[in-house]
Image: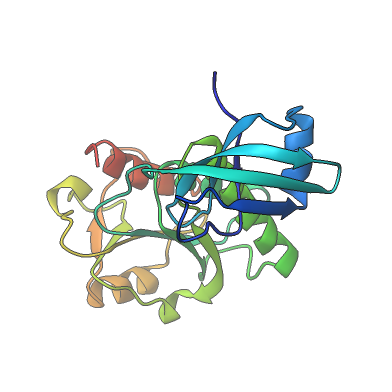
Length: 236
């Protein structure tokens, strides 16, 4: 039987004593929808890599009490954190990218303001929604880590540690030819219309490596997933 899995704000440092955890809010409603009651088992995770078995001890419409039973090993993550730096996109395309990127293992998602982007900013409500999308995707994909979606910054202000790879339609280098796991990884993808020539030149001059995503021009919402898929295909 597949157990219900919910995210909790935090897990106690010591689970051996079987501590209790009190929840309110949306996850309590989810437990009600799943028709859980006292004595039912479930899984909980904190979004930062920890996961545990738990048991419902009490549940009403507004509040749930869980007994934590044992900590479980978290699902494997990439050897170094992967940041996806993605240009702002129109409509619900960003939500689709955030959902899939979470499933594919990114550690965080940095939104970018770029020259060709039709969208110049997003409001606090949309940013909060994107973070909820990431939380839901980590729950559904059985991942113990939930990546944070960070507010947009101008491309020129983006900094990175370690390696940076930018989707470039006019080079022949493959990501697999350069990627290593000695340092963190940042992947950059542009908006509809791509990065401008000056933006691409600036990224390359700052040390980013241009990589090709195949013989076709990909949509702005497809390119980041192609980059992440190339990493996933390595089996890490």
